[in-house]
Length: 271
Image (cartoon, rainbow, N blue to C red; front, side):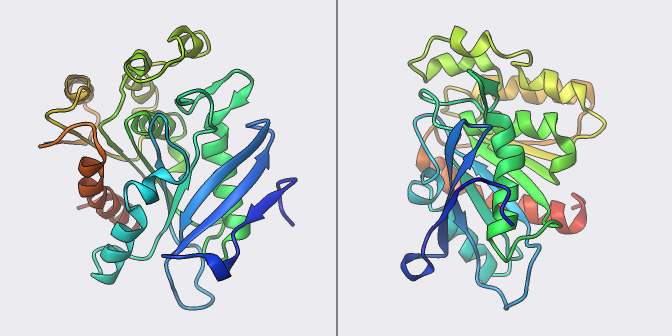
């Protein structure tokens, strides 16, 4: 039995590259949301594969990580080279509000609950390789990095690890990217800054890493977050690399996230 009133699945006869697609109607969005999935080939009967959620940035949608970032190809390559174990990559839309929802509840839509609850449930109920015991990790880029850091901090029991690339770290930084007035976000948000969310659940946080390009507009906010976490004694990994706020950077560094997740899931974050 399906938990959603309607759910549309892609036809396996037309799927390519291990990609599958779901469109789910949910009260949390007061409508439909899309999920792009990479499901690796495994032996028949294998289930409870880990689910690694990748959140897109502003302007994007469920297809962005696959069709701009090649996330499915990176995952397949790492699996083939035995650098990570098979895992499902879930690439949901953010809810499609404005230039970006920022992945929290506002304007009568629960964008956070869509990601944290609806997306995993839709996968567990419709993808045989997933199950109720599938471990979950969350990552994202830019606005999606903000979403990953915030949702991972607010719902630490849901995730084995958090990773983020080129992240917005304070909600006001959305103004650098979106057309909507900043007040459309801040008027509905009681917890706008990543460091506050991290501080609230500091004893429960899962394994944490984030990175940013040295030519990125958001490099200084990311450096500040690193210093704040260090001062609070919150264990994490922060890395800087050449590059800016662009797809070539995220394409290159996604593999670090996937390896980090594999370690967190199978070795409980111990390196």
